[in-house]
Image (cartoon, rainbow, N blue to C red; front, side, top):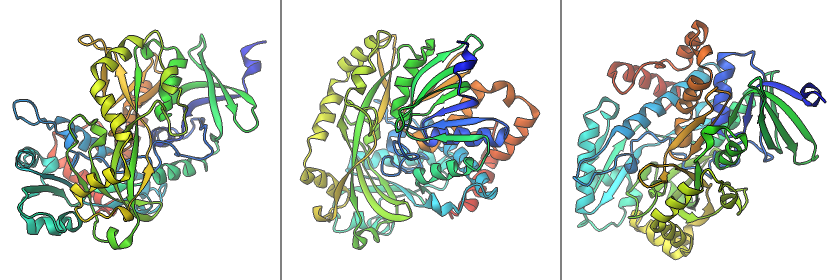
Amino acid sequence: MTIEKIIDTKVDVLLVGSGVMSATLASLLSELDSSLNMMMVERLPMIAAESTDAWNNAGTGHAGYCELNYTPENADGSIEINRALAINASFETSLQFWSYLVEQKILPSPKSFINATPHLSFVWGEADVEFLRKRYALLKKHHMFKDMEFSDDVATLKKWMPLIMQNRDESQAVAATRISYGSDVDFGSLTRHFVAYLQTKHNFNLALNTEVKSLKQLSNGRWLVRIKDLISKKLRTIDAGFIFLGAGGGALKLLQKSGIPESHGYGGFPVSGQWLVCNNPDVTQHHDSKVYGKAALGAPPMSVPHLDTRIINGKPALLFGPYAGFTTKFLKEGSFLDLIKSVKTSNIKPMLKVGRHNSDLTRYLIGEALQTHKSRVATLQQFYPQASKADWHLENAGKRVQIIKKCDVKGGKLEFGTEIVASQDGTIATLLGASPGASVAVQAMLDVLERCFSTQLKSAEWQTKMKAIVPSYGQSLIEDADLLKKVRDYNLKTLNLV
């Protein structure tokens, strides 16, 4: 039987997973070339139900304004700010694309997915106050953070975050920084808006309850993909020109199935998460911001504690956490065998090395998972002294699969960022890792376009369209203060963030 006879569908682009990364890439491609035939497959019965869902992610609109883990302190006391600058620029790129889509009436009212929410960093104790003061002094000098405020004045802090300062010991050294135009993003809602619009296109097909069973590259460079309808159990074969594996924690397994050389050596370290949630309006009405602290000693960076005002599906809530935990599942709706099944001959050495060098982290995660409600509330009370355990309940967050990769020095390295892995011929790509994740989705997917659609992107037509979609494309917001001001003013006005 010829290959042509077993093919059920032929597409230009196959997107595996319906999260914010896949939806962002599909939306970018749709604007750049409306003739592309695209298909999105999702193994769950609904869109953006895993890491992208609002209850499963931090939803902060990570911009580097308040996340202290993006500005680490070195042993000599100096503070690194380059990552905060890069993340801030990337978030402005996301805001530009969303602003464009709002102006084009592709996205509905901004309030359906993004809301103005001040971003604060809060610390206590003389040493951490001094750290925050130094961090502020460095960031304030840069045009991207020129609007940041600092205060160690109790009266001012009571205005900025009354709930946190309520009945706090006034002899305690405290300080905070603040950016008034931070945001809260419901990435689940945003992604569902993306996909709803794409479904109005005749050349976009969405297949829910559908799982990828195998991937094989043909001699002509295209991919033969076997998918299974989990309801009817029917198998189908897709011929795809380009594949994006945007399956969150499930991406590693699919990358391994592809067999591309670039996948060798990668492993995953899964971390679970939980939130304390308060819906009591007598409490939530007194807090309207996102307040980040410093991570506990030994805690992974994604576990930086924060007290968050959230708007989820249009309803306000107050979240504290996340509380990390040990897990072997790569997805919330995954299997406890995910970690074991991810071990291959090509990655077993770096995974074993990482396990050996990160035993303290494993013990920390297990300890977190064994916490009681009382101990979790005790941690919350460091932020909010008057917190009552009766007002808070526990919700499970999503899974975060951190990257494990080969390292010449230790044999294996655990990374807490994100990384794009693409084949040399540019016919398949994926994004591995977690934070800052969804907030930098547009920049991440622009990187995919540059690696996998480089020829098209060099054309005058795509360059013109890209400049309309992301006005700062090809320029540096970090280096150009005037451009940053123009872009930021446009974003804040269009998305109703001021």
